[in-house]
Amino acid sequence: MANDPIHQFQIKDLAGPVNIGGYDISFTNSALFMGIAVASITAFLWYASRKQALVPDRTQSVGELWYGMIHSMVKNVLHEEGMKFFPLVFSLFSFVLVANMLGMFPYFFTVTSHVVVTAALAVFVVGLVVVVGIWKHGLGWFKLFVPSGVPIVILPFISLIEIISFLSRPISLGLRLFGNMLAGHIVLKVFSGFVVSLVALGIGGIVGAIAPLAMAVALTALEFLVAFLQAFVFAILTCVYLNDALHTHH
Amino acid sequence: MAEPRKPHAPKKDAGPELGEFSDRLKNLSDRIAAEKVEQAGTQKPSENFQAATAYSKGYRLASEFVAGVLVGGLLGYGLDWLLGTLPLFLIVLLLFGFAAGILNMSRAANRSQPTAEELKKMTPPRADDEEED
Image 1: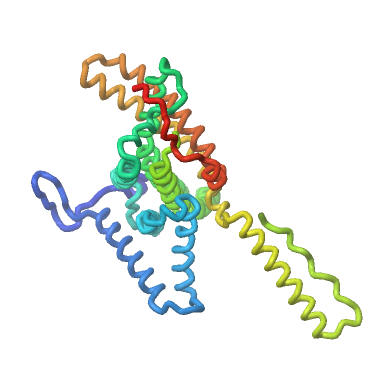
Image 2: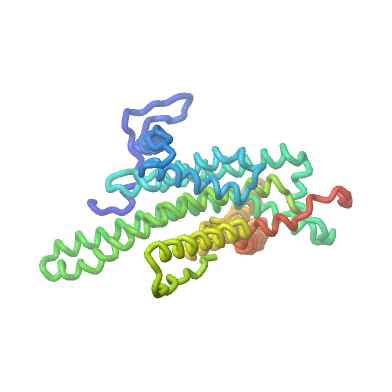
């Protein structure tokens, strides 16, 4: 079917199946677009910083804005001691942002609309939080789950709630990005599909198609906003979680 | 933090060209100085980024809650699957998941307030914590 809204998310094998140790590691369109995202980030940032002029030209100032925005955000949330995480946060933000933006091109594949990708990023971030927390505070980090000043009677319940709350971090982090991208692209496709089906009906349909067309235009703008916003939210939550790991306050 | 821009000072009568320019220059440097003082005072230039938009905030709160419930339910289902007591832990941990979701949500809502102030007030972890366990 031509306007099946889910069709755009299909994973396709591009170079034939490759199996190693029972795992399918074929080169898919998802992998291709991840590669394109990384390559375009690298190429752009290299191109933007090639001159290092005192008075930046347009490309350089875009690069500087990009860098400066994340730099000030990391500094605000993590302060001076957390600046060693800046490369990580910057890479995460750039990857998610460019993957989202690439998905806005027609016929391009949206890497972040697959829960496997976003969940892998989120589990990596929360895993890092655990490692940093234990490295920084030793086993005392687990006091995070045992808040002080709670009566011993209800302490097990509170601890269980805290543990569930902590475990839900990667879920909410990954699910939010995935859900936003998936839902946005489906809605966009559905409205565009309305236009196509209505126009096929004839003159009355063409008049009727104006409303969904306007909606699709507006949604495209909204999707660009969401693509940026979700990348930023992902980065800022990474910072917030890392900050929690650096300063355990319970 | 946006400072209300002052309208241009009314042109003085009988002012020669140079006088007007130096007036404007002084006006500008005053405004820059005021802006700098303000920037140094608040030291949070990207507050608007943290607030982002109402849309992302709302979506964030909702997803925090859903994630709590989901994790609770999944943990319960996993325990039941291991122990073969199907509805028991699913129900219990689902309820705990609701609680964790609410906790997540309230934390996320509190977190959108400025953190710098909070961190300053925060004391380092106490060394004399009672060792009950």
